[in-house]
Image 1 (spheres, rainbow, N blue to C red):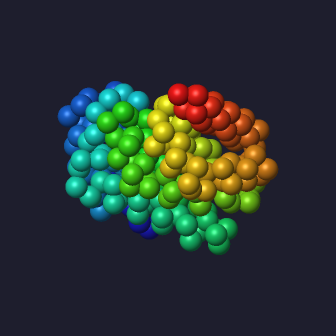
Image 2 (image 1 turned 90 degrees about the horizontal axis):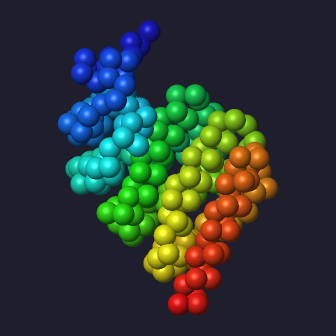
Amino acid sequence: MVRKAAYPPSFRPIRNPCINLLQIYRLVRQLRSLEIGEQCLDLLSKNRHSCNLLAIFLWSSPGSMRLLLLVITSAYRPLVSNRLSERVVRRTCNAIGLFQTLASHPHTKMSFIRASMPEYLYAFLKTRSRERNYERLRFASLVVIGSLVEVDNPEVVDYLLATEMFPCCLCCMEIGTTLSKTDTSRLVRLHSMVVGRLQIC
């Protein structure tokens, strides 16, 4: 039986429900740890709204983005083979949650787009399964895309129009649950409004 790696004492979520800036920085640095990396990812995702600098820490910390991409892309094979485990989905949703932090922060949003990071989520949006695990990945990815279109920026609009965002949204509206369909409809309406305002300008 494989033992689950323990949190470092100062990072145990039960003892520290509200972790501070220094702890956030240390968690980012320890994402690459083989022993506690997955636990650090979980804690960062749960506390991502409590630190305004998290996006900057993630983007500037060597190896952090590579680690998040590895977590996300490692879900592709079980995704297409219909073998998504609870652990894979939880870990992937945690990484997608940190993507949302990067997509919504003004200092990392454009770098995130220029690196084509959102396209790594399209595989989750194009799935045809209605099972709960697929829906969790679908909805988490929609939240990231939604964070991108909430800014009147021509570069963001051009990027989304040039990629598979709209075909993916149509797939979500066809396959997703009510929650995903509602979020997709909001996303498409918001994007259309942004395009309209930019054309007027």
